[in-house]
Length: 219
Image (cartoon, rainbow, N blue to C red):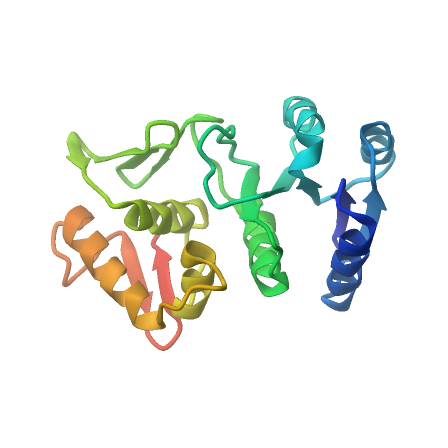
């Protein structure tokens, strides 16, 4: 049975473009444009994911309170300051890059295999604690001072534990599809991240390498 995705609040041409792309990728997709139709659809059909334009932010707030459902919220820029940090939500900046959207969808659907605590603030895995509101990272009793990109890499990998991301995928997800950086940038940031969080960066316990494929947070 194919996963069903609901597209909400996008301009008609954009919504139809997303729907066409998703169906080419093997998903089923429905489109609605206003809040009243969202809840009618969700109550009638079991959706795996909702792609929601931030113009429907009030609907987003209601959805995360009422349903345990994955959401990708389309926002106008990459700054997520002020947006609620929720384990079921990922933020994707516009304009939409379809390959990046596909990566977000895959990551969002795979997250169901894991649990995070608590619900809306702190992610904890293997002694690493990430406070998503203050962006404070600790390992045991030790505070870890990360750059914004190091933090984003760590958070993405922790939220998708044991999922391998290639350097190209990390480059698109962390720096954006229009970045002029190359894959070597990812290696540099991962090396610096390891130097900060690993007891022995040469034999890492957290940020692991799958040779020839990419990086992952080990379980």
